[in-house]
Image 1: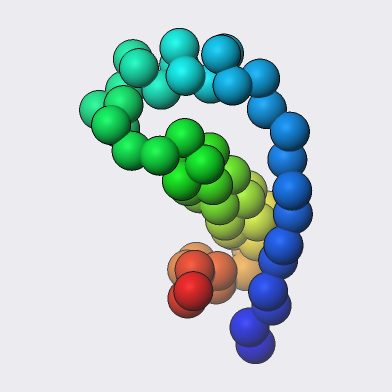
Image 2 (image 1 turned 90 degrees about the vertical axis):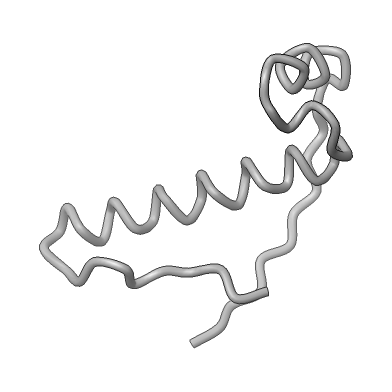
Length: 64
């Protein structure tokens, strides 16, 4: 099953930029940087919840 998730987040651009500058991703667009972190964290969170409840590993993946 594919589920499209859309969300708008408000971030403190100065804080995000300072954090982003400490990473290897300092040269990518800030929106893409934030989007990547939110997607990765969401997928990891759901995957961990599924695994911790004794269900199958690798049940969630991004298909874009």
